[in-house]
Length: 251
Image (cartoon, rainbow, N blue to C red; front, top):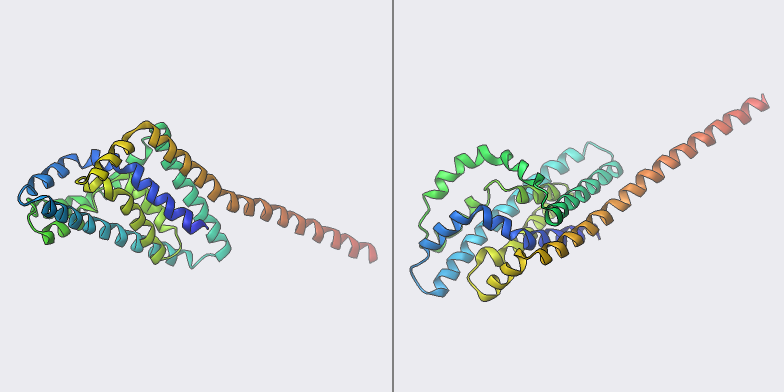
């Protein structure tokens, strides 16, 4: 059940967070659009889809790599303890994104500096692909632009990294990318209408509330485990004390 909730949460974060992504990449989107002026609507749609396919591919690769590293680290810990840690981290991430949507909390943007150094090496290569006139160049540009430092992407990446396996991590980031796809494509009537809905306060409140519920639900099980574990340990200690006292009385 936790996996399904995480995937659904990632999809919702992508849908609700698309305006943030568009705000960060407005200039890039404008340059990309300028390069797509040649050809009809179908041609421009094909280039846009190729670009976003490359972007989703980068997200998926990030999720697989991050989850594989964290899973390798987790192999050195007790399985039960590690599972509790992963669920608590996932819950914290969902609650953090909910705070961003509900209260405009800007803490997520602070982690964008993490990828700044890597992006300085990637950006020149991405710029050389503009203007985009072929699906191949659009695909390559999307694959490079997927590494653009973004607090929202990095936050979901943390959730993907603690998903338990490379496959699960890839699935979480792919779900997030799918959520951003309608708005980032931005060429169909449905996409434009969805972008207007996403930008409304009503939509942010609904999505933020859902993510908050998901986060609290995800935290419930490990929290109860910790509480019951502490009580169980206390009970074992009490039982051992009583046993020792009984043996002492017999002697």
